[in-house]
Image 1 (cartoon, helix red, strand yellow):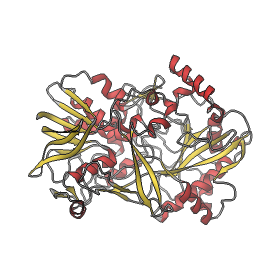
Image 2: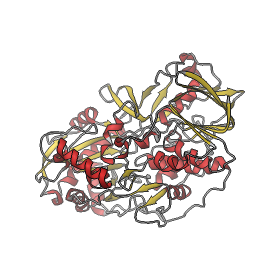
Image 3: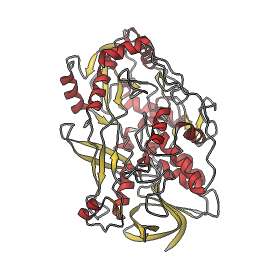
Image 4: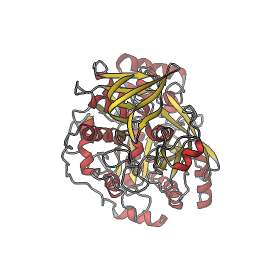
Length: 556
């Protein structure tokens, strides 16, 4: 049995960061365990190919939820990265930090020292923003962030103009001083290639003699002695191995994997563990609870002009796009195609934005299938601050049996109201004159969907996960918290969780950026380094103008 100072479980967005930072000191012997394998596939590297790894068994856990009771008993797809880089190797590469108030909310929920001003330096540390650093953006970090092809398709700017015409603010940088409004969208792409956590944090340090990376390793449990984490047990090539940790075991297996491993290890709600046939080592009822996710649907329109990506779905077009990308990493292959976006409020009395838009100059599904024959465009829209809560629940002591996943999507009536606002506000935006030269009839939901009842029925049938499971091992000090503000598991020595599962609440945005931030900040905590000083920069929050307020009040 080998002994390491630190054992990190999961080489995803957080695990890659931790492996890099903890192994910087050559005296620290670090083991990184990952169930998946290499991320060197062209389909992972090429941004436009994002739907392929996400739907490939080799690169992703293809989880499905239980029948969701408030979504017509639909089983929802919940893919999670199973490859070096984790979900950062299979995601849509959208870079959204979240609203400043999201992190202030974390601190209000008991995550001391995790307010926005304290988190901002770690966002900056992780990032190289293609326009250079400023008070909000980083210029020398690992993660490359840009705007793809700079919104060359006129539909991107039409969307921003329509938002302005509808009375909303314009924001030049939603990851900066002001999130709210319409503007360009950012993506984790560097030099035309996916900027994953593996590429940026792991690849440069793989040769370190004090860093051991084991792929194909399924962690079955944390080895505990008298409520002290001593190491992990894992299976590789059909053989059970044990590795010892002299300092700490750190779970970075994500919002499904981390609570599952805790439960397999005997840490969790006593009744759940006993029912599954697992010996109870430590009763911690919050493990697997508080699960949150974003839902979204596609608002789709036909387009009058032959300028959409629907024309690029044929084999010849795809071949030309691929050839250009292979040649010089440019063109349509070098973008995720989400190049403009918006963050708005669902109603006038909401304190900060809770609706997010990703604009796409195509009418196409996540699985790459066209919505119809012809030109079209769509906005992905969702209510981003859900009040519904779900759970990740151990079903068996056998680690190969996946946990029971239930989000309880739309359980809370406020979430239903939020999606009604998504439909009505979106129609108002797309109806603006900026789209007059492009808009040619609503494909989805369809103009016949008008009443609350009709909208609710459409939403229950059409919404999909935005693939942002989080918050299932929440940080805080209450009885349902799993880790403290230092990321230590309550009641267990030498064991931490560092990934999106420790978010107390889900941010208003995509998860990759805040997950990497959390890992950067946690690395300093683990190493006993002083925290980077808070930025104390201004944040624009009260930006809703009178026109917007009037609009919102109609739907309130």
